[in-house]
Image (cartoon, rainbow, N blue to C red):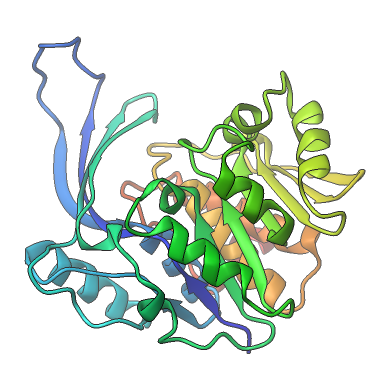
Length: 305
């Protein structure tokens, strides 16, 4: 069966829930705080819980946070391709969730910020595997170029999935110009698509993305509780979302992406996969924490309820 090979960054989140962020220099009390494994783990956990074999092709450290990250991946049955990096710990993200469900992140990367050609050569992708590339990786000096070189050398039978994240805001960097022709699946939320294309609305962003990407690339653009837009070229479908009472949007997009990949890998159509992904994201926002994707059985029950 097709695997998900995730080349992004697994980090540990210090998750805190609060009414609202203080003004600069201010002070507030949080209602809760906990350490949770997050970052790239969120996508991998979602895919694995929905039946897709997953390999983490990224580094992880040898300290307290590295131990937490490995334990979480092992608990979800995620294969860890690389040995721990000595002398560095896994990175940390302070994830602040307000009562409105808005999220604020402050991150400090660790061992996962580096990746060499030798690291990448340790795993041989199979035909039909999905290789997940995070936009965050393109911003890391110790990782970006080896990763792009490796991705561009992959056989065409390997599906390349790109998630720009919130920090990749334009298509004109040298790395993005190199990567765009090799992207098979684009997955992002609407603000990320608007920022990347400079468009004023989703319709124009979808058209602009289609011009930047190969003609047969699959576009998946999430639109919060409205669901998502999915399709190729000019043939884009809107897949409605589900109404739920949201308490925390942290990790919802990752749940959507992981479940979307799992559905496609199992032979579902893009629209069928997107409907399952919308359900998973809806369930995820009803729970606090980053890696809150439901499993396949819970998605089935939600859709059939």
